[in-house]
Structures are given as C-alpha cells and as structure tokens.
Picture 1 (cartoon, protein in one colour):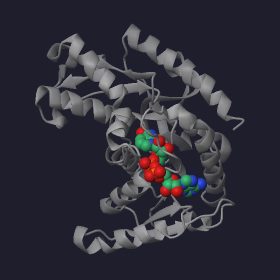
Picture 2 (cartoon, rainbow, N blue to C red):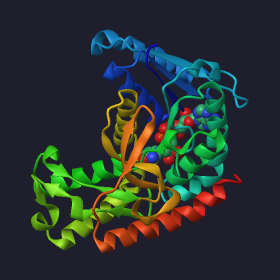
Picture 3 (spheres, rainbow, N blue to C red):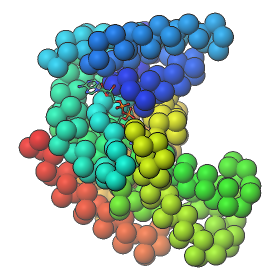
Picture 4 (cartoon, protein in one colour):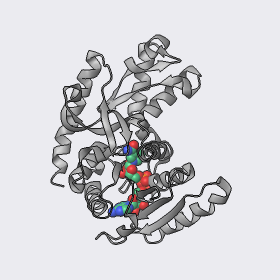
Length: 316
Ligand SMILES: NC(=O)c1ccc[n+]([C@@H]2O[C@H](COP(=O)([O-])OP(=O)(O)OC[C@H]3O[C@@H](n4cnc5c(N)ncnc54)[C@H](O)[C@@H]3O)[C@@H](O)[C@H]2O)c1
C-alpha cells in the first residue's frame, strides 16, 4: 500500500506541515483535516495546483471533520498522523495557558485517530507539548513508542541558528542539543554542542552561550511577540514534517523528541525531551547521551516538573 500521512488541524502549523510533506514527494497521500468547513478542501486544492510547478506527485486531500469524529474515515490507513489541532499562544501567554482548551480538542482528536487509524504513529505538536503528548497516548490507548511529540527538533534548530548567526558560520557547521521539556524547563546541553567539531564552550564565552540559551528557551515567545496574532510555524512545521518522514522511511535517524522515558538517565514513567531513534514503529529506542552532572540534574528536574502536569491531564 502507498504511504499515507494525515495532518489534523489546517491552521498555520498544519497547512505548512502538509505543504512540506507533499513537497518531499515521498508520500502517496497527505490528508489535511480541520473542523472549519471548506478550509482543508480549499488548501488541498491550492496545494495540488502547485504540483506541476514544484514537481511532486503526492496528492493532498482536504477533509472537514465533525466533533463526533465524522469525516475521520478519510484518515484510515495513515502511517503517521501529525496532530496540530488546538489554539496557539497570544503575546504574554505561556504554553500552559492553553492546557484546558487544547486538552479537550486533543483528547477528541486522539480518540478519533485511534478508531480510524489504529496502526498509525502519532506525532503531537499541540501545546503545551509534553502534556498533550501524554494525553494523546492515554486517549488513544496506543503503546508509548507510537506516540511522540515535537519540540526538541525545533528548539535545537533555534539554538543552532542563533549560534551560527553569532559566529557568522554556516548552520551546517553547528551542532546543538536541547533536552527536557518544551517550556521553562528546557535543558540546553552545551557540553554536546560543537562548531566545526570544536566544543561550543571553546568557541564562545560562557556569558554568550547563556544569552543564546535564554533566547532559545524564549524562542517561541519572541516570534509570538512579533507576530501579535498566532505563533511560529515555518521552523515548527519543518520539524514535524522531518519526524513524520523519518518514521515512514524507517530511517533510524536520531532526533531530540518528546518520548516516553522508561529508565534512561535514571528517569521513568514520563514523556520528556530526549534523543530517540525514529523508525516505522515510532520511537525505536531512547538514546542516552553523555551529560555533565549539572545537565543531568536539570534533566531530572525537568522530568519532575512535567511529571506532575502530565498526571493532571489524565482527568482532562
Ligand atoms: N510543538 C511546537 O513546537 C509548537 C510550535 C508552534 C505551535 N505549536 C502549537 O501548535 C498548535 C497549532 O498552531 P497553529 O499556529 O497552527 O494554530 P492555528 O490557530 O493557526 O490552527 C489551529 C487549527 O486547529 C483547528 N482545530 C481546532 N480544533 C480542531 C479539531 N477538534 N480538529 C481539527 N482541527 C481543529 C482550528 O480550526 C485551526 O484551524 C497550537 O497549539 C500551537 O501552540 C506547537
């Protein structure tokens, strides 16, 4: 059977993700859904009309879904489902301010996905990310390895961009890493960051690294503040689309993602940002990376912070 990916939510994040997935030209079908009548169909029509120019054959199908799960038949057989449904932040809001409203939306989506695409891998992006990933696993009943969240690919890309700009070097010569949560307890890992293979700590003074770390942690809010309405979507959609592609191609690529941690780093029973090997089964395995004592302590702190909040979503 052909490769099929679904993107739930056809707002800024979802529509850009659908575009990236279609332009990869590795899927037979990209299904784009939303509750807004006509929007996904209109976007699909528009995207399909770009095929002759961009040179891809992937067919985009737009479907309006109902709150009771109507329309979800169209996602049957999806290899991957990217969940972007929900409300984004406004200036001054934290991701946690979205918890109540997005929990209701994401729970309904997860239940419908489980009914119609029971073998899919779900990539969650709706915020607050760590909590929505945990909720999606609970509501879908999927094994943990088939539900993961997108945060670290984006946070790391932001970190890399800032370092490259600071040093005036190509982004490809910079490697950075962030772990932990997608929020205040994000854990940047300077000890694993390099520029042309040299440790970041030898290339930039500690104060400058700290400045970049703070800017990375607030990377989403900086964009929200400038846009005034809506939040970032170009870099976020690039991140989610890459993850979906890694799963479908069974690539074995190692990315920082929000994955279920079960003993790694001495942490258990929580969704947390860690390095993971991605493949057809979702998260093939969590990859442990060497951390300094301080970084490990921060990761454990992040795990405890998100554990408490993830427990709350069970009843939402
Ligand atoms: N994980 C990350 O790194 C990251 C980055 C950026 C944004 N986000 C989050 O992604 C989400 C989407 O952001 P956006 O910019 O696309 O927002 P948006 O408002 O442009 O789009 C959200 C879409 O979801 C739709 N929707 C609402 N309920 C739905 C349902 N039950 N089923 C299907 N669709 C539904 C809305 O109609 C809307 O079109 C937000 O929660 C945002 O905070 C996450």
